[in-house]
Image 1 (cartoon, rainbow, N blue to C red):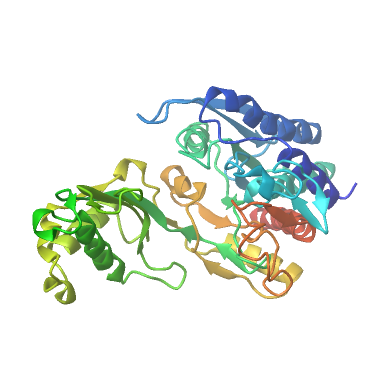
Image 2 (cartoon, rainbow, N blue to C red):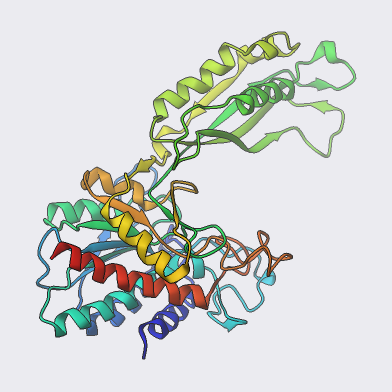
Length: 433
Protein backbone atom coordinates (compact mmCIF):
# COMPACT_ATOMS: atom_id res chain seq x y z
CA UNK A 1 0.00 0.00 0.00
CA UNK A 2 1.46 3.44 -0.90
CA UNK A 3 2.45 5.62 2.04
CA UNK A 4 -0.26 8.15 1.13
CA UNK A 5 -2.93 5.46 1.55
CA UNK A 6 -1.42 4.47 4.90
CA UNK A 7 -1.63 8.12 5.99
CA UNK A 8 -5.28 8.42 4.96
CA UNK A 9 -6.31 5.20 6.70
CA UNK A 10 -4.40 6.09 9.88
CA UNK A 11 -5.92 9.60 9.88
CA UNK A 12 -9.41 8.08 9.62
CA UNK A 13 -8.74 5.78 12.56
CA UNK A 14 -7.40 8.65 14.66
CA UNK A 15 -10.35 10.91 13.86
CA UNK A 16 -12.80 8.22 14.95
CA UNK A 17 -11.43 8.41 18.49
CA UNK A 18 -13.19 11.18 20.52
CA UNK A 19 -9.92 12.29 22.10
CA UNK A 20 -10.86 15.52 23.82
CA UNK A 21 -8.07 17.02 25.90
CA UNK A 22 -8.17 14.91 29.09
CA UNK A 23 -8.84 17.66 31.62
CA UNK A 24 -10.95 15.19 33.63
CA UNK A 25 -10.09 11.53 34.39
CA UNK A 26 -12.93 10.14 32.26
CA UNK A 27 -11.41 11.66 29.10
CA UNK A 28 -7.96 10.16 29.55
CA UNK A 29 -8.60 6.64 28.13
CA UNK A 30 -9.84 7.93 24.76
CA UNK A 31 -6.90 10.31 24.42
CA UNK A 32 -4.46 7.51 25.24
CA UNK A 33 -6.12 5.31 22.62
CA UNK A 34 -4.82 7.59 19.87
CA UNK A 35 -1.27 7.05 21.12
CA UNK A 36 -1.80 3.30 21.06
CA UNK A 37 -2.95 3.53 17.43
CA UNK A 38 0.29 5.32 16.53
CA UNK A 39 2.44 2.85 18.46
CA UNK A 40 0.70 -0.09 16.79
CA UNK A 41 1.36 1.50 13.39
CA UNK A 42 5.02 2.40 13.92
CA UNK A 43 6.36 -0.45 16.04
CA UNK A 44 6.15 -2.93 13.11
CA UNK A 45 8.33 -0.43 11.21
CA UNK A 46 11.02 -0.90 13.87
CA UNK A 47 10.16 2.13 15.98
CA UNK A 48 10.83 2.28 19.71
CA UNK A 49 8.06 3.84 21.80
CA UNK A 50 8.53 5.57 25.14
CA UNK A 51 5.30 6.12 27.08
CA UNK A 52 5.66 9.24 29.23
CA UNK A 53 3.02 10.40 31.71
CA UNK A 54 3.31 13.63 33.65
CA UNK A 55 1.14 15.55 36.06
CA UNK A 56 1.42 18.57 38.33
CA UNK A 57 3.88 21.20 37.20
CA UNK A 58 1.34 23.98 37.57
CA UNK A 59 -0.84 25.09 40.46
CA UNK A 60 -3.94 25.27 38.26
CA UNK A 61 -3.47 22.10 36.18
CA UNK A 62 -2.61 18.95 38.07
CA UNK A 63 -4.30 16.35 35.87
CA UNK A 64 -2.22 13.44 34.44
CA UNK A 65 -1.28 13.55 30.77
CA UNK A 66 -0.13 10.74 28.47
CA UNK A 67 2.57 11.40 25.86
CA UNK A 68 4.43 9.24 23.38
CA UNK A 69 8.03 9.64 22.21
CA UNK A 70 8.95 7.53 19.19
CA UNK A 71 12.34 6.99 17.59
CA UNK A 72 14.38 4.24 15.95
CA UNK A 73 17.22 2.39 17.72
CA UNK A 74 20.68 3.19 16.48
CA UNK A 75 20.04 6.83 15.64
CA UNK A 76 22.92 9.00 16.76
CA UNK A 77 22.29 11.99 19.00
CA UNK A 78 22.03 15.19 17.03
CA UNK A 79 20.80 13.58 13.82
CA UNK A 80 17.41 13.63 12.19
CA UNK A 81 14.25 15.63 12.49
CA UNK A 82 11.79 15.52 15.37
CA UNK A 83 8.10 15.95 14.63
CA UNK A 84 5.90 17.61 17.27
CA UNK A 85 2.22 16.78 17.16
CA UNK A 86 -0.89 16.35 19.28
CA UNK A 87 -3.90 14.07 19.08
CA UNK A 88 -6.16 15.83 21.56
CA UNK A 89 -8.95 17.92 20.08
CA UNK A 90 -11.29 20.71 21.10
CA UNK A 91 -14.94 19.82 21.84
CA UNK A 92 -17.11 19.42 18.73
CA UNK A 93 -19.91 21.75 19.85
CA UNK A 94 -23.40 21.11 18.56
CA UNK A 95 -23.42 17.62 16.99
CA UNK A 96 -26.38 18.57 14.78
CA UNK A 97 -24.15 20.96 12.80
CA UNK A 98 -22.02 18.06 11.57
CA UNK A 99 -22.95 16.23 8.38
CA UNK A 100 -21.97 12.79 9.61
CA UNK A 101 -21.08 13.26 13.27
CA UNK A 102 -17.97 14.91 14.71
CA UNK A 103 -15.98 11.66 14.96
CA UNK A 104 -17.16 9.80 11.88
CA UNK A 105 -13.87 9.72 9.97
CA UNK A 106 -15.88 9.43 6.77
CA UNK A 107 -14.61 10.49 3.36
CA UNK A 108 -17.07 12.54 1.31
CA UNK A 109 -16.41 14.44 -1.91
CA UNK A 110 -12.67 14.13 -1.46
CA UNK A 111 -12.59 15.33 2.18
CA UNK A 112 -11.92 13.49 5.43
CA UNK A 113 -14.55 14.64 7.94
CA UNK A 114 -14.22 14.84 11.71
CA UNK A 115 -12.88 16.84 14.61
CA UNK A 116 -9.10 16.94 14.43
CA UNK A 117 -8.82 16.14 10.72
CA UNK A 118 -7.00 19.44 10.15
CA UNK A 119 -5.88 20.21 13.70
CA UNK A 120 -3.93 17.99 13.68
CA UNK A 121 -4.56 14.27 13.38
CA UNK A 122 -4.13 14.50 9.60
CA UNK A 123 -0.58 15.83 9.93
CA UNK A 124 0.26 13.30 12.65
CA UNK A 125 -0.87 10.47 10.36
CA UNK A 126 1.00 11.96 7.40
CA UNK A 127 4.28 12.16 9.28
CA UNK A 128 3.86 8.70 10.82
CA UNK A 129 3.31 7.20 7.34
CA UNK A 130 6.25 9.15 5.89
CA UNK A 131 8.51 8.13 8.79
CA UNK A 132 7.57 4.45 8.44
CA UNK A 133 8.39 4.54 4.73
CA UNK A 134 11.62 6.45 5.36
CA UNK A 135 12.66 3.99 8.08
CA UNK A 136 12.02 0.98 5.85
CA UNK A 137 14.11 2.39 3.01
CA UNK A 138 16.96 3.57 5.24
CA UNK A 139 17.20 0.24 7.02
CA UNK A 140 17.19 -1.60 3.70
CA UNK A 141 20.15 0.55 2.67
CA UNK A 142 21.92 0.00 5.99
CA UNK A 143 21.59 3.65 7.03
CA UNK A 144 20.50 5.16 10.35
CA UNK A 145 16.87 6.25 10.52
CA UNK A 146 17.51 9.29 12.70
CA UNK A 147 14.00 10.65 13.07
CA UNK A 148 11.60 10.92 15.98
CA UNK A 149 8.06 11.90 16.92
CA UNK A 150 6.81 13.66 20.04
CA UNK A 151 3.06 13.20 20.32
CA UNK A 152 1.07 14.64 23.21
CA UNK A 153 -2.56 14.52 24.30
CA UNK A 154 -2.32 17.92 26.04
CA UNK A 155 -2.06 20.80 23.57
CA UNK A 156 -5.51 22.29 23.14
CA UNK A 157 -5.94 23.31 26.75
CA UNK A 158 -3.24 24.09 29.33
CA UNK A 159 -0.30 22.27 27.69
CA UNK A 160 1.23 22.00 31.15
CA UNK A 161 2.24 18.34 31.02
CA UNK A 162 2.60 17.67 27.31
CA UNK A 163 5.30 18.74 24.87
CA UNK A 164 7.14 20.98 27.30
CA UNK A 165 7.68 18.08 29.72
CA UNK A 166 8.70 15.65 26.97
CA UNK A 167 11.18 18.16 25.55
CA UNK A 168 12.69 18.51 29.02
CA UNK A 169 12.94 14.70 29.21
CA UNK A 170 14.53 14.55 25.73
CA UNK A 171 17.21 17.09 26.65
CA UNK A 172 18.03 15.22 29.87
CA UNK A 173 18.20 11.93 27.95
CA UNK A 174 20.67 13.39 25.44
CA UNK A 175 18.30 13.23 22.47
CA UNK A 176 19.34 16.07 20.17
CA UNK A 177 17.43 16.33 16.89
CA UNK A 178 18.93 18.33 14.04
CA UNK A 179 15.69 20.29 13.72
CA UNK A 180 12.00 20.29 14.60
CA UNK A 181 8.83 20.16 12.51
CA UNK A 182 5.55 21.16 14.15
CA UNK A 183 2.56 19.73 12.30
CA UNK A 184 0.11 22.55 13.01
CA UNK A 185 -1.93 24.01 10.13
CA UNK A 186 0.47 26.39 8.41
CA UNK A 187 -1.44 27.76 5.43
CA UNK A 188 -4.75 29.58 5.52
CA UNK A 189 -6.47 28.34 2.37
CA UNK A 190 -4.17 26.51 -0.06
CA UNK A 191 -1.75 23.79 1.01
CA UNK A 192 1.84 25.00 0.64
CA UNK A 193 1.05 28.73 0.79
CA UNK A 194 3.14 29.19 3.93
CA UNK A 195 5.56 27.60 6.34
CA UNK A 196 5.64 29.03 9.85
CA UNK A 197 8.94 30.02 11.45
CA UNK A 198 7.46 31.35 14.67
CA UNK A 199 4.25 32.42 16.39
CA UNK A 200 3.07 35.34 18.45
CA UNK A 201 2.42 34.81 22.15
CA UNK A 202 -0.89 35.22 23.95
CA UNK A 203 -1.63 37.16 27.13
CA UNK A 204 -5.14 37.34 28.61
CA UNK A 205 -6.50 39.53 31.34
CA UNK A 206 -9.48 41.47 32.64
CA UNK A 207 -10.52 45.08 33.09
CA UNK A 208 -13.15 45.78 35.73
CA UNK A 209 -14.95 49.11 36.16
CA UNK A 210 -16.76 49.79 39.41
CA UNK A 211 -19.65 52.25 39.52
CA UNK A 212 -22.80 52.94 41.46
CA UNK A 213 -25.99 51.04 40.65
CA UNK A 214 -29.07 53.13 40.01
CA UNK A 215 -32.14 53.99 37.97
CA UNK A 216 -31.31 54.87 34.36
CA UNK A 217 -33.51 58.00 34.49
CA UNK A 218 -31.52 59.61 37.32
CA UNK A 219 -27.97 59.90 36.05
CA UNK A 220 -26.96 62.22 38.92
CA UNK A 221 -27.70 59.39 41.39
CA UNK A 222 -25.62 56.62 39.79
CA UNK A 223 -22.23 56.14 38.18
CA UNK A 224 -22.32 54.01 35.05
CA UNK A 225 -19.35 51.58 34.88
CA UNK A 226 -20.19 50.76 31.26
CA UNK A 227 -19.08 54.23 30.23
CA UNK A 228 -15.65 53.85 31.84
CA UNK A 229 -15.22 50.40 30.36
CA UNK A 230 -16.25 51.54 26.88
CA UNK A 231 -13.72 54.38 26.89
CA UNK A 232 -10.97 52.14 28.24
CA UNK A 233 -11.52 49.59 25.49
CA UNK A 234 -11.61 52.33 22.86
CA UNK A 235 -8.23 53.62 24.07
CA UNK A 236 -6.67 50.16 24.02
CA UNK A 237 -8.10 49.25 20.62
CA UNK A 238 -6.81 52.51 19.15
CA UNK A 239 -3.21 51.89 20.21
CA UNK A 240 -0.88 50.50 17.57
CA UNK A 241 2.27 48.59 18.53
CA UNK A 242 5.22 49.24 16.24
CA UNK A 243 6.97 45.88 16.53
CA UNK A 244 6.06 44.03 13.35
CA UNK A 245 8.67 42.24 11.26
CA UNK A 246 8.52 40.84 7.72
CA UNK A 247 7.56 37.46 9.21
CA UNK A 248 5.50 38.38 12.28
CA UNK A 249 2.49 40.72 12.59
CA UNK A 250 2.59 43.45 15.20
CA UNK A 251 1.31 43.04 18.73
CA UNK A 252 -2.45 43.50 18.87
CA UNK A 253 -5.10 44.02 21.57
CA UNK A 254 -8.58 42.54 21.24
CA UNK A 255 -11.64 42.43 23.51
CA UNK A 256 -12.84 38.84 23.83
CA UNK A 257 -15.93 39.17 26.06
CA UNK A 258 -17.78 41.73 28.15
CA UNK A 259 -20.14 41.33 31.09
CA UNK A 260 -22.42 43.79 32.87
CA UNK A 261 -26.04 44.47 33.72
CA UNK A 262 -29.22 42.46 33.25
CA UNK A 263 -30.97 42.28 29.87
CA UNK A 264 -34.19 41.53 31.73
CA UNK A 265 -34.10 44.79 33.68
CA UNK A 266 -33.97 47.71 31.28
CA UNK A 267 -33.87 50.57 33.78
CA UNK A 268 -31.09 49.41 36.11
CA UNK A 269 -27.57 50.70 35.67
CA UNK A 270 -25.19 48.01 37.02
CA UNK A 271 -22.62 48.55 39.72
CA UNK A 272 -19.85 46.76 37.82
CA UNK A 273 -18.76 46.03 34.26
CA UNK A 274 -15.88 43.88 33.12
CA UNK A 275 -14.11 42.78 29.96
CA UNK A 276 -11.90 39.85 29.09
CA UNK A 277 -9.06 40.83 26.76
CA UNK A 278 -6.38 39.06 24.76
CA UNK A 279 -3.10 40.43 23.43
CA UNK A 280 -1.20 38.55 20.72
CA UNK A 281 2.38 39.73 21.08
CA UNK A 282 5.70 39.45 19.28
CA UNK A 283 9.03 38.20 20.59
CA UNK A 284 9.98 41.85 21.15
CA UNK A 285 7.51 42.06 24.05
CA UNK A 286 7.09 40.30 27.39
CA UNK A 287 4.15 39.77 29.73
CA UNK A 288 5.63 42.37 32.07
CA UNK A 289 6.03 45.07 29.41
CA UNK A 290 2.52 44.42 28.08
CA UNK A 291 0.89 44.52 31.50
CA UNK A 292 2.65 47.80 32.18
CA UNK A 293 1.68 49.19 28.78
CA UNK A 294 -2.03 48.45 29.27
CA UNK A 295 -2.03 50.20 32.63
CA UNK A 296 0.03 53.11 31.30
CA UNK A 297 -2.32 53.72 28.37
CA UNK A 298 -5.25 53.97 30.76
CA UNK A 299 -3.41 56.26 33.18
CA UNK A 300 -1.81 58.58 30.59
CA UNK A 301 -4.58 58.96 28.05
CA UNK A 302 -3.94 59.94 24.45
CA UNK A 303 -4.90 63.50 23.52
CA UNK A 304 -8.20 62.54 21.89
CA UNK A 305 -9.39 60.77 25.08
CA UNK A 306 -8.18 63.38 27.58
CA UNK A 307 -11.16 65.64 27.06
CA UNK A 308 -13.72 62.85 27.04
CA UNK A 309 -16.41 63.36 29.73
CA UNK A 310 -15.83 59.83 31.05
CA UNK A 311 -12.04 60.18 31.34
CA UNK A 312 -12.12 60.80 35.14
CA UNK A 313 -13.88 57.45 35.60
CA UNK A 314 -10.84 55.52 34.37
CA UNK A 315 -9.07 56.10 37.68
CA UNK A 316 -11.34 53.46 39.22
CA UNK A 317 -10.46 50.68 36.78
CA UNK A 318 -8.89 47.45 37.98
CA UNK A 319 -6.60 45.81 35.40
CA UNK A 320 -5.34 42.25 35.84
CA UNK A 321 -2.99 40.44 33.44
CA UNK A 322 -2.95 36.65 33.78
CA UNK A 323 0.79 36.28 33.26
CA UNK A 324 0.86 32.79 34.79
CA UNK A 325 -1.29 31.41 31.94
CA UNK A 326 0.41 33.31 29.11
CA UNK A 327 1.70 31.55 25.99
CA UNK A 328 5.08 32.91 25.01
CA UNK A 329 6.05 33.85 21.43
CA UNK A 330 8.95 32.35 19.56
CA UNK A 331 10.86 33.01 16.37
CA UNK A 332 13.24 30.65 14.56
CA UNK A 333 15.39 32.44 11.99
CA UNK A 334 14.96 30.59 8.67
CA UNK A 335 17.98 28.41 7.95
CA UNK A 336 18.82 25.19 6.15
CA UNK A 337 15.69 23.35 7.28
CA UNK A 338 13.36 26.13 6.12
CA UNK A 339 15.20 26.28 2.80
CA UNK A 340 14.85 22.52 2.28
CA UNK A 341 11.17 22.56 3.21
CA UNK A 342 10.48 25.53 0.93
CA UNK A 343 12.13 23.84 -2.04
CA UNK A 344 10.27 20.57 -1.46
CA UNK A 345 6.88 22.24 -1.02
CA UNK A 346 7.47 24.34 -4.14
CA UNK A 347 8.40 21.23 -6.10
CA UNK A 348 5.15 19.53 -5.14
CA UNK A 349 2.82 22.53 -5.11
CA UNK A 350 4.24 25.17 -7.45
CA UNK A 351 4.73 28.54 -5.73
CA UNK A 352 7.46 29.01 -3.14
CA UNK A 353 5.76 29.17 0.30
CA UNK A 354 5.92 32.31 2.39
CA UNK A 355 7.91 32.06 5.61
CA UNK A 356 5.86 33.82 8.27
CA UNK A 357 4.86 33.77 11.93
CA UNK A 358 1.12 34.45 11.71
CA UNK A 359 -1.63 32.56 13.49
CA UNK A 360 -2.21 31.24 16.99
CA UNK A 361 0.18 29.82 19.55
CA UNK A 362 1.58 26.29 19.22
CA UNK A 363 3.81 23.90 21.12
CA UNK A 364 6.70 25.20 19.03
CA UNK A 365 7.05 27.83 21.73
CA UNK A 366 8.50 25.28 24.16
CA UNK A 367 11.36 24.02 22.00
CA UNK A 368 13.94 26.79 22.47
CA UNK A 369 13.66 26.49 26.26
CA UNK A 370 15.44 23.13 25.99
CA UNK A 371 17.06 23.28 22.53
CA UNK A 372 18.07 26.95 22.15
CA UNK A 373 19.88 26.59 18.83
CA UNK A 374 17.40 24.31 17.11
CA UNK A 375 15.74 25.38 13.88
CA UNK A 376 11.96 25.07 13.94
CA UNK A 377 9.44 25.07 11.11
CA UNK A 378 5.70 24.47 11.17
CA UNK A 379 4.29 22.63 8.18
CA UNK A 380 0.80 21.18 8.13
CA UNK A 381 -2.57 21.27 6.42
CA UNK A 382 -4.51 24.45 5.53
CA UNK A 383 -6.44 26.07 8.37
CA UNK A 384 -9.60 26.25 6.26
CA UNK A 385 -9.69 22.47 5.90
CA UNK A 386 -8.90 22.50 2.20
CA UNK A 387 -11.96 24.59 1.37
CA UNK A 388 -11.28 27.51 -0.95
CA UNK A 389 -13.01 30.82 -1.53
CA UNK A 390 -13.57 30.10 -5.21
CA UNK A 391 -14.84 26.52 -4.98
CA UNK A 392 -16.70 26.76 -1.66
CA UNK A 393 -18.03 30.34 -1.37
CA UNK A 394 -20.88 29.39 0.96
CA UNK A 395 -18.84 27.25 3.33
CA UNK A 396 -15.44 28.95 3.30
CA UNK A 397 -14.69 30.59 6.63
CA UNK A 398 -17.94 29.35 8.17
CA UNK A 399 -17.51 25.59 8.40
CA UNK A 400 -14.94 22.91 7.67
CA UNK A 401 -11.90 24.65 9.13
CA UNK A 402 -9.95 23.98 12.31
CA UNK A 403 -12.13 24.24 15.44
CA UNK A 404 -15.26 24.69 13.26
CA UNK A 405 -18.25 22.43 12.77
CA UNK A 406 -17.70 19.90 9.97
CA UNK A 407 -13.92 20.18 10.35
CA UNK A 408 -12.31 18.42 7.42
CA UNK A 409 -9.17 18.07 5.37
CA UNK A 410 -8.81 17.46 1.66
CA UNK A 411 -7.53 13.97 0.86
CA UNK A 412 -5.34 15.48 -1.86
CA UNK A 413 -3.73 17.81 0.69
CA UNK A 414 -3.14 14.93 3.10
CA UNK A 415 -1.40 12.98 0.35
CA UNK A 416 0.73 15.98 -0.64
CA UNK A 417 1.72 16.62 2.96
CA UNK A 418 2.80 12.98 3.32
CA UNK A 419 4.99 13.26 0.24
CA UNK A 420 6.51 16.53 1.47
CA UNK A 421 7.33 14.99 4.84
CA UNK A 422 8.91 11.94 3.16
CA UNK A 423 11.08 14.06 0.88
CA UNK A 424 12.08 16.29 3.76
CA UNK A 425 13.21 13.30 5.82
CA UNK A 426 15.38 12.05 2.97
CA UNK A 427 16.73 15.53 2.21
CA UNK A 428 17.67 16.13 5.84
CA UNK A 429 19.35 12.72 6.03
CA UNK A 430 21.36 13.57 2.91
CA UNK A 431 22.32 16.96 4.30
CA UNK A 432 23.49 15.45 7.59
CA UNK A 433 25.54 12.70 5.89
